[in-house]
Image (tube, rainbow, N blue to C red; front, side):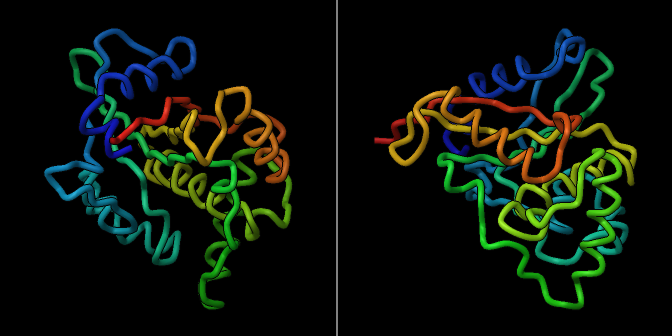
Length: 212
C-alpha cells in the first residue's frame, strides 16, 4: 500500500474506480490519499486519530460510545472526490497479501469492552442480514470490526463511505491470481453468516510490487 499510494497512485486509483458498482463511478472522480504518506512517515491511523485525519474530530465521542479503544488500524485512508461539487466519499482500506492474513487470533478486548462490541455486532448483523456465528468474535474478528466501522460512518454518522479490500497478487507469500483469492473471500462471507455481498464494500486486486 505504501508503494501504491506514494509511487503508483494512478494504478491504485483506477483499480478502485473500476471496482465501484455500476452507476457509482462518476465522471471527473478523483482520489486524495491521506495515509500512508511518505511525507507522514507512512503512519497509519485508528480510533480518534483516524477520525481526525478524515476531518471528523467532532465525532470522536460518538465513536468512543460505539466501539472500544484499539479499533482497526487502517492500511489506507482516502477521499473520493466526485464531480465539480467535490462531494467527498470516505475510503477505508484494508490490504492483504496472503490468505493466511484473513484469519487472526480473534477478539482480545478486555471483558469490560465485550458488551459494547456485542451490541455493535448485533446492530451490524441486522444491517447486513447476517447470521450470528462464532467467527464474529473468533478468527474473522478483524474483518468484522472493519464492517463495524463502515457501519459507523454510513449509518451512525450518515456519511458516504466505502470499505476497500485490496488483495495483492503474485506476492511470494500469497495467491497468484484473482481466481485464487475468490474461494477465501467467499469463505469469509459464509463463515460470517452473510447471505449476500456486504454493501459499500469493494474488492480490488493488484499485483504485488517488486520493491528491489
